[in-house]
Length: 88
Image (cartoon, rainbow, N blue to C red; front, side):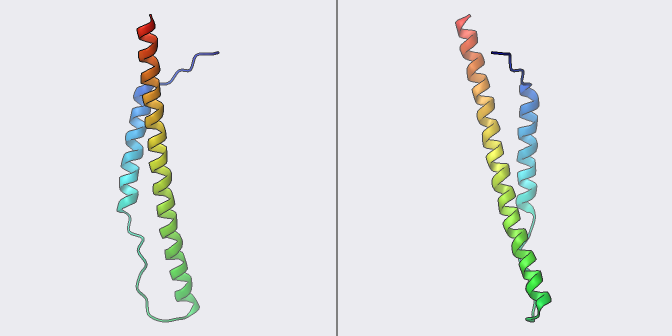
């Protein structure tokens, strides 16, 4: 089995970047605008508003899951290094 080289500092920096991105996304307001009328244009605008709302929630889920995954990778790397060091 070959050696896997991972720069832990780089991994930590990118996890922090994802956390900043998550904060930025959470601060974006995609609430539906209140518009009067019932024409097709208004319906289309409401549809776009709803799509952006779903997109925001999906992006937040993706970023949150990515942060969790990379935190687990970092923890596994630390555990593996500790086990190897204790066996030497």
